[in-house]
Each structure stands twice: as C-alpha cells, then as structure tokens.
Length: 110
Image (cartoon, rainbow, N blue to C red; front, top):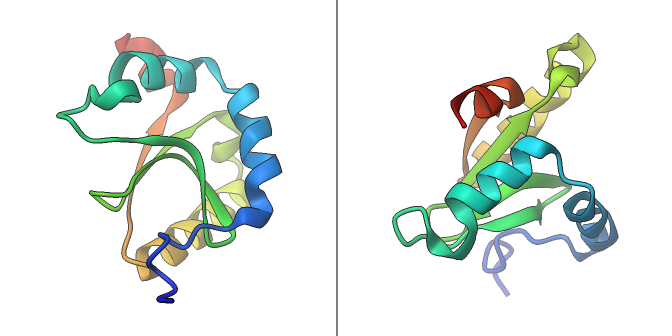
C-alpha cells in the first residue's frame, strides 16, 4: 500500500484528535460551523483535527491536500513557532499546503 494513499493518517494519534475535537477553541468552532462543515466551502469536504504523519492539522481537506491551522497566543512563543515550522516543512514534504490564521483574526472577522 502506498504510504500516501491514506493521506499519511496516523491512527496512534486518534485518542488525541478526539480530545482536541472535544476541547476546540472558540475560533475553531466558528470556522468549523460557519465555513467548513457540511461542504460549505465551495463544496469541499473538510475534517477536524486530522492526524497526518506525526502531526495533527486543525482542519484538513483531502481533495485539496490543504491543512488549515488556527494559531492562538502560544504560537507567538519562539519554541512553539519553531515547532510550527518543523510541522509545516514535514507537511509540505508530503505534498500538503498549510494555511495559518491567528485566532484573533478569526474572532475579529466574525
């Protein structure tokens, strides 16, 4: 089986993805409910808190190979920023595009 045929899904992260979905941030809930759920975004299907390799993307569209990340205040810290870069490089190497938005931008726009 081709490693990318399942979009690099990592079933070992399933308990963590479930926990993250149950404890979503306000901006994640807004984006999900108002833009991404039920193919609202131009008919594309998105998944919430999807594991890809050893990482978890906030939102993932298989068809577009697109990962959307919403960043809270902790992403301003250098250590977290470096982790984000490493994650983004890995996802890029797997053929995914990563879009990042700040929580405050989501809250401001909606």
